[in-house]
Image (cartoon, rainbow, N blue to C red; front, top):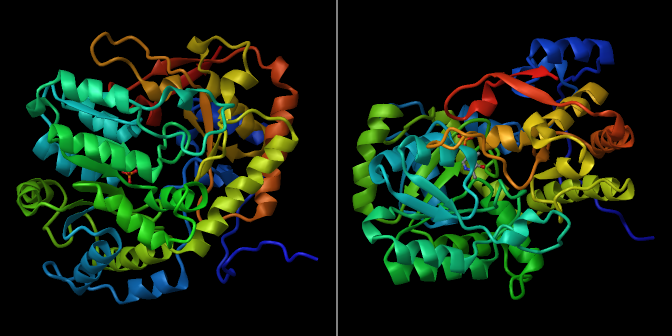
Length: 458
Ligand SMILES: *Cc1c(COP(=O)(O)O)cnc(C)c1O
């Protein structure tokens, strides 16, 4: 008999989670104004809101925390992290920040000005927020196939080079501070970008003399997909692939809460010493001194270990196979989701599940509330609420896709939990025709409204 696959870790600390009744959940979600972000986590049974900062640290990471050096300047933990970033990612200069968006803030405060263009594949929501807040434009040049959820493509997060070149050719160089390549492409469903596409984007950037920024939260998952899907990489280690990916970038922003498996932290890294120096001012003003930025010493120590563990094949294999396990269950039940399954999450295709709902009633949000009511599972809307209003016309933007993301935290849940998720999705799917009303907004913030939006049931 073939020996089946099993996780490459065992568990030595557990955290209780609690089931609830449907009546309780109806009350709680109403009190939360039908915004899943506003739920108390104790009212959630399986929390798939995000895989950001919600993973389980390893024994090595916890012991590194005890060794954290909390010196204000020049802490040993800073140098451990510096060495890891240089060795694993190939960047000699970096600034620690409290998380990924803070890295964006430090970098974009320095290089982005009003009227600029930052083309790339789909920008992450905070990245887009930071660009648009500065009255610059995030131009999405993702391949159009990314919007067809049933299409099986190995690298569905790629940049359409023609679209990108149009932006680079039609705007003066001074108006394009950088190209932003997000790996994996979170907004398009956690879809990877091939090494070939990274290289081609790099070559276009060189041709027009524009720097390339890698938005790198899920860089290791991207490397895993290159190894398992792209010709010529099967025999390379994840670390070799990661080094090559970053060899094409001039700078990187990083949310360490994803593939580096820490609960909080981030950084912005540079190959260019001068740009690093220019960014220091904003780091000191907004984050902290340049050798700790937004992080305590113990967090930098855990991050240095996390970068190493997160780029081990076994860690990634265990993680991505769990996502694929859930995907296989959903296939069995005939549930439509963004295909193929992404690295960190399943993105349910809400428009296909609830075709009767008008887009003005927030289709993916409606599905998210239903799944919570069904079994206390919390996903997150990637649809019209997240897409926000057009900064100029103030009209609602309706994206091509209405997705409900079920993000799987790293090393946190077992495959029994995956079975519960799949069954709950199936139950909602089976009663989909009875879901005829969505939601309307009663309160929203001017930027990134999805976090605090309040809704009423129609
Ligand atoms: C999470 C993420 C960010 C923002 O990072 P935070 O740590 O949440 O602030 C930016 N870009 C991408 C691609 C991300 O996944």
